[in-house]
Image 1: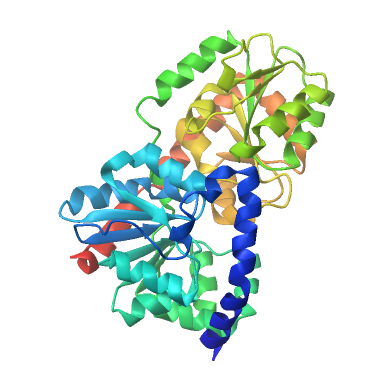
Image 2 (image 1 turned 120 degrees about the vertical axis):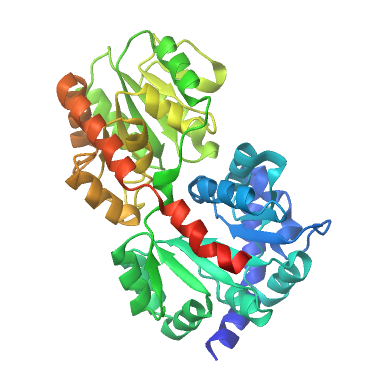
Length: 415
């Protein structure tokens, strides 16, 4: 009965979803490309058997990189299909894998679209990343006998409460999966409480992500442009956070330190540039290769270079955590040895942040003002900064291995 009601809801909501897609496409034209795929209509049928992996957007696609590389190496007779929900996720997979994989949009979770996807691609196995629980998709996979796994699963308290409101549908969806691996014991406990039968804890795939081979060279170029200035990076910032951080920067920072801002979403680059200039701060933009040395703020309006910004910075502030967004990935600065400060809102990465703070790899600030003061304090204390950098590298190294465990766990079902 729950699934029937869910299907009826989608029939009513599908026109709304399409209108929303068109509205969003006016701001971000990439959303208007490949619209047919979202309805389960695709082009040429692949020639080889498929291993299918779904990564919603940029973060999930980057997290999946070590696992996908392992699948490509271990199963050369199969093609890998990556599905996405956002254009930025699709662009990231193009950047990381080029023509070595197939890519498409996952259809809306309504019966005709999901059946169209299954009929066209006929995957040998499906792999969903993190928190992608789509009842119709899980039901369709079970109907055709395709093993479907949820890997690197995370489930915050807030999300668990939301799923609990649809307890019957959630339980049936979780039990329709062939297996689940979770990032932490807390995630596994919440999934079991919602009805999952067995959940293995394999750690977080994000610890295994390594910077691209040309990242160090790009970071050296950035440091050359900075001409020896110290730099604080505000990484993956979300709407409203730049205002808080810029105002805090004006109250506390001196002219000799550079603030680097890399917004999470590319469509906000111009908006953030305007916020900087409205405050009378000299701005330079990465995309225009403008002189950085004379600027107070450098806008990182480029794609695929976040690791290089982390390497070039002396301290990082993790965006998404200064307003109630749940935080962005705090593992990336640890991997490259950049001391990192998170704000109060980190429920999407609760286990990582808790462990990172305990290891001395991450610091917590109550708000943007405290974060800026803490960053400037680290800038002025080279010894303390080096200690946090070393703790971050060791913290990331100690938690590696999730991708290898996951690949070993999946391999028998793929074979």
